[in-house]
Length: 132
Image (cartoon, rainbow, N blue to C red):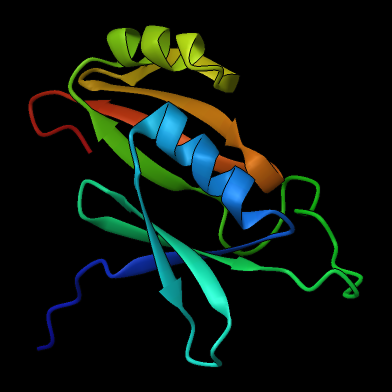
């Protein structure tokens, strides 16, 4: 049976450079300038080995924003931390906006949600004792 591993997340943004700066400033992402297969520039990020590709949305495209919730499709991506309260305090200092404050979901599992540029939802997760 094939083994599937994370490879990348791909975002579109009207301002990839500003979006990349947000991820760098808030989540310590490393910014890597790359070229897409079509020859256009793209900004990639590395967050602890996870690649986030940010492609520029064409200015003449009439693209919708993220849909109102709830909806079908990709809802968010998650980043794991050892101490959610400590991470939340640091994220607030860095300007992150929480739309779901840190909370205990069940024993061993705390979560919170941050709103990133272009209304991307990022779940911040603390797992203890192999909580799923």
